[in-house]
Amino acid sequence: MTRLTRRQALASLASLGAVTLAGCIEGAGGEAGDGSGATVPAADARLPLPMEPSALREAAVSGGPDKDGIPSIDDPSFIAPSEVSFLADGDPVFGVVRDGVAKAYPQKILVHHEIVNDDLAGDPVSVTYCPLTGTALGFDRGGTTFGVSGRLVNDNLIMYDRATETWWPQILATAIPGPWNADPQTRSLREFRLIWTTWGRWRDQHPETRVLSRETGHPRNYARDPYGSYNPRDGYYAGGAPLFPPLREDDRYGPKRVVMGARAPEGAVAFLKDSLREAGVLTGQLGDVPVLAVHDPRYDTGYVYRNPDEAAYEVVGGRVRGPTGESAFDRLPLDRVHTFDAMWFAWTGFYPETNVYE
Image 1 (cartoon, helix red, strand yellow):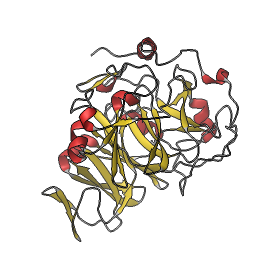
Image 2 (cartoon, rainbow, N blue to C red):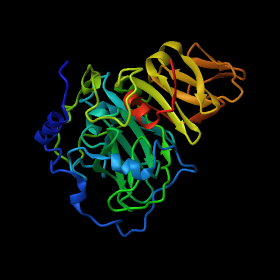
Image 3 (tube, rainbow, N blue to C red):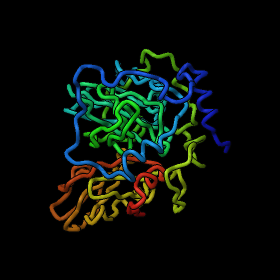
């Protein structure tokens, strides 16, 4: 396998008209806030950080493009599955259902934009994807929108909100100081689950889904991923080192191996995705709290639940069986913890004290 360099990736993006390469964003200018008075909805409790917010700001590096050099999609349009000709069954999509309406955001499109500012059932949200860490997360955005800052920390996308110019590393989902907001309130975003799955799996479960259209208002070749391919997996996604040195190195697993990670104010936990797929159910600890991880074969994803009584569960005939009977994979009578796919190097860089299970 030929390892892709950041220079080659950015050159590919530039050839597609995707970015303007001009150093780092401190010189990009811009006023703090948009004058609207809009604020970003905050989570009830702050998520853990690996170091002080100011230290995270110091660890941030230029990813190459300037602020908004990778343009967010701010006026998305959607099409029906019958109109989708650009996705193969094995291509990744990030799916969500709210109030009975299903939407799918193709990785082929998100790799060129990283953020989609959208609405779900009337709620303003941002759907975000970082190709360098393999993470797709959804956030409530309130009366503002999110953009791509042009900076990375631990190879992970740093978003900014256009109301306050606050920096928000995507995986951490928590504010850190940026050049326009020297001392922000350190708070976490309110987030929702995106399911990383394939187009074929999502369409089978949600035949009426709406799909993000390639009509984004930006000229892009959405058939070409500058970092490689997920179907089949090659290039950056297939293995090798991260493009930038991570915050920490942990060689227990290959850096690009996928984990299902969950973090909460009390700590972090990770389950190797391939191990969870094989076992169906795994147990572990989130801080001092027992947790249960369940694999959902419908989407090839996983969910993590707090399981304080350490009740026994097993997968039987496409359902999860526990003390109170059978439940759907995503509907256990337990407190579910926000869980998402991530590359191992990114997870352990941000959560070095994480418990890991296989």
